[in-house]
Image (cartoon, rainbow, N blue to C red; front, side, top):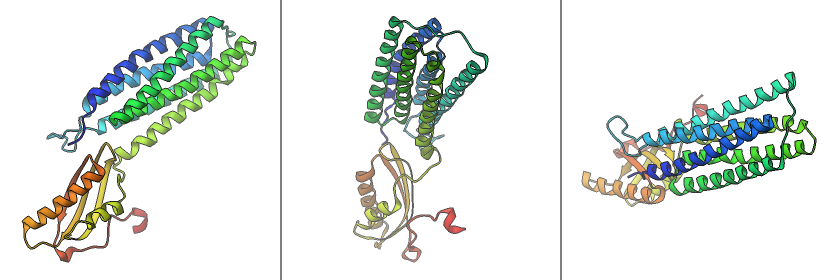
Length: 302
């Protein structure tokens, strides 16, 4: 049975949503007071934080690991889809930051003004961001939630963005107006990299990339007494979250009951090693013996 972590995920997302709304409002207010392009861009980045939390709550609502008639393999890909939505939000934020910076270069704008009290408010924002990122990542690893880990990755990028913005505004306070504009570009690059990382981490789940090396599954199966041959092994899912394994097996058995006991032992050992896992074993006669442990890649066939 797959582990249902949705209640824990929702609790974390609700708490981080409230904190992200606080951060977003504080950045927007200080950004309006100072006229800082980099800070307003950072506030936009925080808008995506809050939107990501809402998206995560929706995705978590529909990502049950339990199968039903319409979704016999469970609903966990909804959570991966939610993580890809986070990646899309990051891409939008990156575009908005770059667009604002280019417009400032071409059209100019009012000088940025910052006071020590406003800088102290931004340090509070930074502290909240650090807490949210480490709390969410820790809880994501504890309950095995890709959407929490992806959202923590986003918030981690927000920390570096805020540090860059604070550094730029300190420079503005010291009289270097250009620092606010110049630092808008690395902010955009950090946002883009965070989005790419989320995309890269979640695509394997959605495209059914191999979860476990077939050689590892083959070795475990052949250790079971009575197993003669194991071939056409396939696996998908996320190791530690939910894995599906299929294989063809040839066993030394004169009756169905003996063959059943052998396959159950194979399943037991695989579950012990890779749990949670769902396994489908197709028992074949000795004439079907094959040395193809898994399927050939498209490159090797061409």
